[in-house]
Image (cartoon, rainbow, N blue to C red; front, side, top):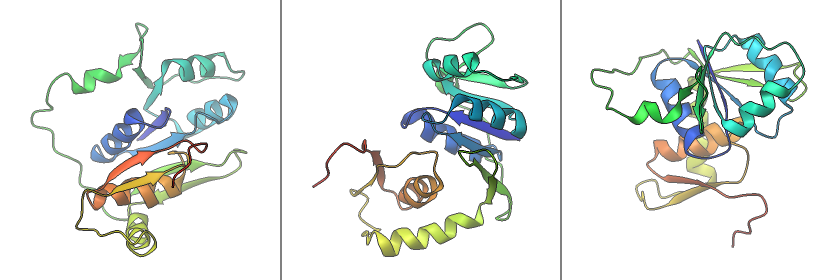
Amino acid sequence: DVVACLCNQGFQTAISQLGTYKIGAIFAPFSPLEQKNIVIHALNECQAKAFITQRSLWDSCEKAPGIFNKDFTVIMSGKCCKSEVPFARGFAKPARGFEAEITPSDAAVILLYSSNIDKKVLYSHQLLQSYLTSAHLVYDLDLDDTRQTVWTASEWSQIASILGIMLAGWYFGHTVETVSCSTRIE
């Protein structure tokens, strides 16, 4: 099953991603900067079972032109309508008895669409291993010092941010923070 996510960078995107992996589903992230007709096409094409989003982003999708197959559950961060599930509901009670789905390393885990819709790529869990090596060599982190912070300026819907920064940083126990492209880091 596919869980799609159209959220700004932040808590919702990170938790949605980790939660999707834990239930053994495929994560399909979309950038808030993406044209909404492309998001609608991809949602229809991937047949997502759930769509995690934020009120303003969802409202702009619903108003975009195109046939919109709504055969998925909308999980909303922000004010909900009757047919939507509040994002915060997932944190109301501990998930007693939940066990993460164990998936093989060659199982699909991330589905990415190109901006011009003509290409999509389905990645497996194995890809993370190559990014872990990159994080170790390229960032030259002291991997035992969990006080370090890993920064990302790129969209969290891009594979380099998802694997190369977010998941690699968390894997090694580091804080991951985002900065806007206009923020200067010295």
